[in-house]
Image (tube, rainbow, N blue to C red):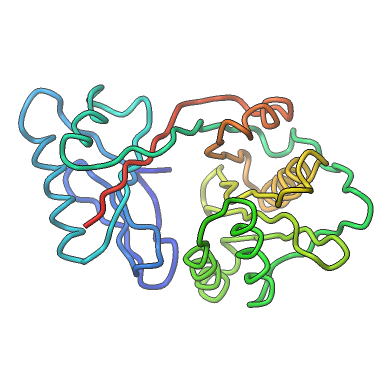
Length: 247
C-alpha cells in the first residue's frame, strides 16, 4: 500500500525516487515520505534523507516522514531526529477483516448518521475535528472537498448529528484495485464520548468498505482508540510515528 500509493487529490503527485516514495501537493495536502527502503551500511541513507529535505524546501512545503516500526535501517528514527525532524506521538497500525466487524452498532437516542457529500457536511466534519482534537482542521476540510469533487468514489465521510448538532465524524478512504480501505479522522466531541459513537462510525465505514469489495480496513490508532478497536476484532500490526520537518 505504501510503495504503490496513489495521489490523494487534485494537484498532488506520488513520486518514486530511488528507494523513497513521497507525496507532494498543495500546501493544504498531506506532503511527505510514505515509504523508504534505505541501506544501513553506506551513505545512501543519509543522502536520501537530505534529498527529501531539499525537495520539500524547494517546494516551500513542510512535510512528514511516516516511519513504521519495521522500516530499515533500525536507527532511522535517530537519523531523522539528527537531520532536524521532530517526532510526533506514536500510533499503532491496526487492521481487521471488514466483513467480520459488527454491522449494526446501536446509536444513542436522538443521533443519526449522515453521509457527507457537500460543503455543509464538510464544515460539520471540520467543526467536530476542531472541538474533538482542539486543532485547526481547515486543511482536512479542503482535502475532503478536493476528494469529493475529483474522485467521490474514493472517499466516504460521515457525521453523527444529535438533534441537528454535529457531535462525531470520520472518513473512509478507499483504494480501488486493492484489498484495503483506510479509517481516518474518527473523533467525538467531549460530552458524547463513551456512548458508542466511535464504534458506530467504525462499523458504518467497515460496512461500506466490505460492500465495495475491500477485504480489510486499517487504521493508525491512538492509545485511546486501541482498546475499542481490539474489542471489535482489530489486530495490531506495527507502530507508526510521524516525523515532521518545518522550514
